[in-house]
Image (cartoon, rainbow, N blue to C red; front, side):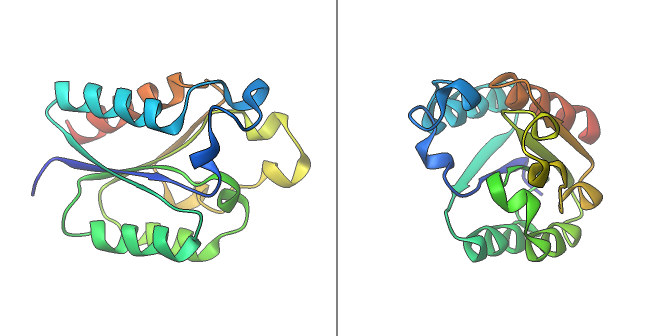
Length: 145
């Protein structure tokens, strides 16, 4: 199998850089993806990025990754707190799975304190801004070594 990491970005992440920069920082999604992809390439991985504001698109991407990717790094945005369907899809993926967040959901509104994904991923990284992506790549590399 190839050394592909599926990087998933959920609803509204296409608005990074302009949406609540005091919470999510000023970097755009494209900047996060470019940096993540470059560092992944340096470690011998390739990255396939999918961003969608639609839950079904993310589920389809997870299902399609079963035979093509060794890992999934997912920032599901608000779907983190609501999508049992996305959790079910992730549960069927046998590779490494890391949930990330730029902000710390546990330090925010109460509805953000629950992750429907936490029980089906290898680990969650949150609250480190752009560094969350770097830490997720480190986790993937270590889990697969």
